[in-house]
Amino acid sequence: MFGLDFISKTTSHLVKTFENNVRQGQQQVERLLGDTGMMEDTKLSTLTEVSDAYRAMAEDLLLHPLRFASAELTLARKHLGLARYTLARLTGKPTEPVAEAAPDDRRFMAEDWHKHLPFDVLQQAYLINSRAFLDWVSGMEGLRGPGRDQMLFYARQLSSALAPSNYPLTNPEVLRITWERKGMNLLDGARNLVEDLRQNPNLFNVAMTDRSAFEVGGNLATTPGKVVYQNELMQLIQYSPTTETVAQRPVLIVPPWINKFYILDLTERNSFIRWLVDQGQTVFVVSWRNPGPAQKDKGWDDYMQLGPLAAIDAVTEATGEQQMNAIGYCIGGTLLGTAMAWLAKKQRAPIISTTYLTTLLDFSDPGGIGVFINDHSIRGIERAMERKGYLDGRAMAFTFNLLRENDLFWSYWTNNYLKGLKPKAFDLLYWNTDGTNLPARMHSYYLREMYLHNRLVEPNALTVAGESIDLSAVRVPSFFLSARQDHIAKWKTTYRGAHAYGGDVRFVLSGSGHIAGVINPPYKEKYGYWTNEQTLPGSAEAWFEGAEHQPGSWWPHWRAWLATYEGEQVPARQPGDGKLEALEDAPGSYVKVKAADAGG
Image 1 (cartoon, rainbow, N blue to C red):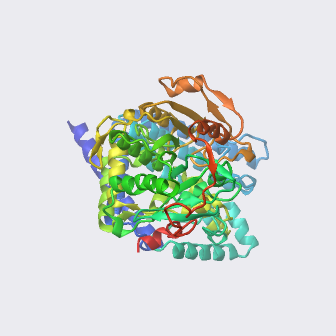
Image 2: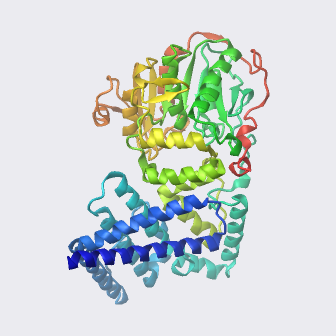
Image 3: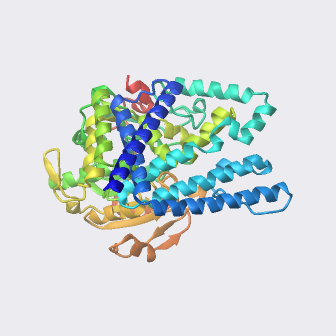
């Protein structure tokens, strides 16, 4: 009894200490950056989650002292090896390092880290300690699935934040640059910080690209076309033809609204939209509104009715065609799948084929974002959205960046603020930082019904716009494109979603990730893709085992599949020639609204 009482009291004391440390750290960050724009409920939710993580660590330490002692012994051996390494270098003897950074870890690539012994020892000590810490957290007993992933996420954030590369006095490359530039790099870094704070009012985020180098409608999203329809949630763009004849059935693209549609139209050579137009297609694209407080109560039903369903009717008015081919990308594909099930229930068939690009229909494994998918975290987000009316798109972008924090946050922190460098102009990173807000009602539904409860794949588990829906009732032919290195929509999970869909299903796996695996124009001849002509096997592993690798882009392969459903050739259609008048030039006005401006 004494032992259990001692453990209980000691654990309680450790937890209070951890919580105090977390609060102090949060206060220091707020003093440094000022009001970050996070709502109080979100702060408390995050604080509680981090405290819970530290509580579990403290309890594991006390309840499994032998495992901790074994880890300490292993750690001591490595530090003893580091001491021998240090002595060998001091005496001029060649020796192998005790710890080396991973080949893709750019933090310690500079020669300064290895040339100067104190910093060589410092970075090796950091690598030894951080790996031991993460190994210990990974091996904690009683943690399975999401709980373990969340614990590892917070442990990794702490470990990454403490890297010596992030601080000027412990980064030899920064010290050298400071000496060579007589401190001007730190002055330039301060200017960069002030500019980032100005560009992101009330919500700090480090710049990843030179924002002044790009303009939507100037050198991005330049494919000619017209806005031919708009409502409260979207504008519909019809693109101008480049061929004398076009396919009879138009193509409707439903992009994600977590980011903006012009990922499909970045530059002329990389534009999927322009490529489609040049292939003789009449292309329509939904351009989502960047919502603010006024759209707080817009839900998933509204996005379906005012998005793809309204677009389908508008495309018919513009072209006179009763049927069309549809493409959904990421969450746009999830919404398209919802709409297809709803249309099936209504016994309507305006869509003759569907294409899903890196789309989750089954959310059983949500990928890296799964660390935030739990009832406690979602309640915190909901409280914050209830006050503001929406989730700020910049906060969403920052959250995704933390899934690869060293590459997408700390590397830019070091370059921009410590080395005083201006970020390079990179169109993809500009798009990545040009986020959109998410209405409170819609996003709460999406997080709970899709991610948390995974109800979209359950027959009749969801009621949308008055109808219970069932994906297996959809009999339209479909093409699923996933990406092998995708950490947002993991390909094996998208494969399960393809199985939930009715009708003839073609599954193709691209190389690379969520963006590059999709935006892979043929001229690049990169990545390749896998195909399997057999009926979908029961598991993703079985499908891949029977798949064949094909070189180059998946675009021509998909284009050949689409040809079956596009109809005969007809004279090219100019935007505004049908029943819908041209309202303004593409890319329209909705896409140009920034998240900060939309939020008021």
